[in-house]
Amino acid sequence: MWKNKVHYYLRFTLGMTRSEILGLLSLFIFLLLADIFSRWIAYQSQQQMTNSSQTTYWTKTLIEMEKSNQPLRTNSKRKSPSYYVDHQSYKFTFSTKDLKRDKKQVWQIDINLADSLAWIALPGIGPAFAKRILAYRDKLGGFYRTAQLKEVYGLDTLWINEHSSQFHVGKGVFRYLYINRSDWKEFRHPYLPYRQANLILNYRKQHGPFQNWEDLKKVKQLDEAVWQRLSPYLSFEP
Image 1 (cartoon, rainbow, N blue to C red):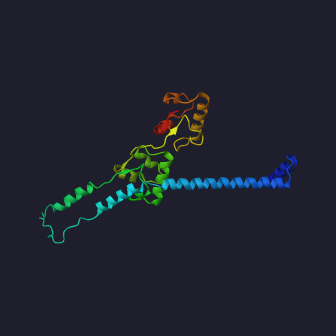
Image 2: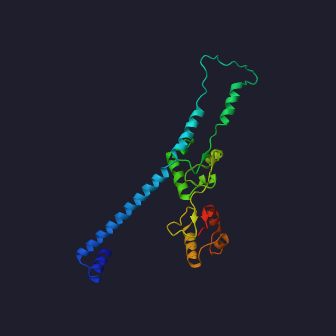
Image 3: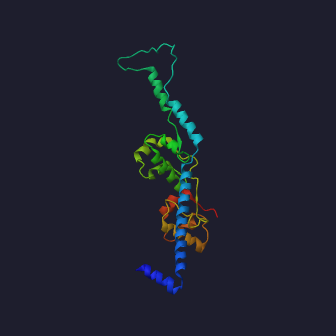
């Protein structure tokens, strides 16, 4: 039914010929395919950027880890170590030294620089989780605290708590949300709801740029909890 109405409108109201209608339809299909193709190219580029990493740095780290996990080599000519066994305590001198050495071999990981190879090296993390962590880090613009790893979908909270001593944020946030110069396409963040983004952009359009937090609080219907959570990523630069 609607096809007949569109055809009638184009043919008799706008006075378009059959060949012109077919040309318009072909142009619409071409533009739709071009848009789909450009989005696919952008998606592939983003995936390549996400998977790119500081390979040299983390390869060296993994090599050091492998070396640290190798068993101690002893000279074959040397006699096997003699030790005294106390039948009450069963203490072995060389075992105590090995335990102390193992405690010192806990290695640190910068969660804002670690690539997929570094994440996979951790127990319990496979390629899928590593890719998910990198993608979420890129959307955020960097982690400013290790607890944000708990926001990664499917990542076990108990696992994060168990390995929290190995994580640090390094330089922290690497991409900021410029509240005074970002347009609608750039004003995006996982912590920022649509309504709050629209509210701020409309207020800025009417009243000018924000100087500081006090100016931001003047906006009516502002959800301060949302913006407090966003505060590490905000920049008031003009």
